[in-house]
Image (cartoon, rainbow, N blue to C red):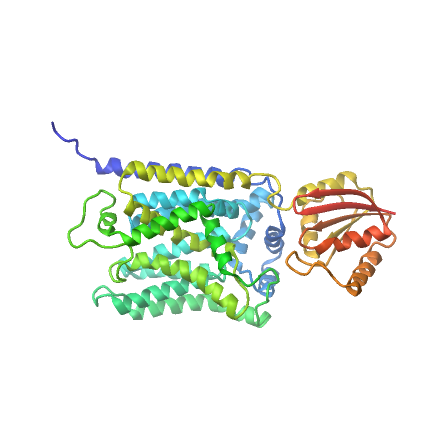
Length: 508
């Protein structure tokens, strides 16, 4: 009996069909309920800036000290054409979240094999962490996308050594720096990787130091105008009050968020451990066909030379997670899990490479993919439940449908006033925002003297009003201080609890 020959074109189309299906799933998960949740402050922060003219927007971003212009310039152009509804504001994030899926497949196929590319694409596609930030009008999915693209062009330059590939890498990396300061940590990882290659590779294989220095100098030159502009405007980074010094537990929580929970993380770590311990690289290098390459068996993480691009993934993860933790400990807190979204991508790639290396049966690989999807379902279902974000839209609607003309609307946390105004339609209400009392991680028991100051401030503000609507975010009115102060001078007529918000009507 003759054996049926394998058609390479059919195999290639099979991977493409599978990738198309994964991308479609990613698209549905990111667009489903895109406008269901109310906008919250971080998103309105983006809207506040894109509503400004070009010059004032750059000045405001520089004064903030933690936000950069690339994403905001893109969003400004977007809302000029498509408006500033919740769906329109969030759509660019969803778009970049979807584009990340085929890009991570491309990188996985280049570094390991196409099956590893598909597995990493599945992990990005169903990650509740990525879906959440794909439904938020912030720069995080754009940041992750650019980190992937910078890495793709880095390897392209390594292969081709052409001016065009170098230019692509420089331009994307420069754009990355203009998107978020954490882009610097990827540039650091890339420099460690290239310098290690120069030190360890054979002379004929190592990159040339001259062109690399020229490329890094070009990236620095691209970013220099912003550094000068920022220094002239501010001269120092603000110490953002929401940062706390990270612990190892925070790092652990970050990785559980990457993979939808501790059980999934344990499975991923187990595969990475198996891959390190077992000789399999010859199998992975054959594209998953199960034919060992000639020569001695190799391991998942052997010597740097010959497998430097896989080590690059490890350096990438460590640079984006460990370095910010060290900086937060020694200098000032700057670590947050959403900032290290880019570290999830090399982690997915490492896990996918480990799976294809240790599990050779296609059926078992398919079961692993099904398992990854199954573990993601509970977290993904929670994402679409009402009240994941503060229900400002519902609070504003409740006020506007019940308030009498001339009522005062008092919002604790002056920066939250913009959110109420975004959803409000009536112009016969007096809206005022006041400074927060305490965040939820600060001491909530304020002393009697400070309570008296709060009382004088808010009672003076409400003087002459017979009806006052109080909207307090759970993080802004620590211990219900404002609620208590107003209760001493007013009658509490209505009290409504919404997700992360408390809405109260006080009358005289």
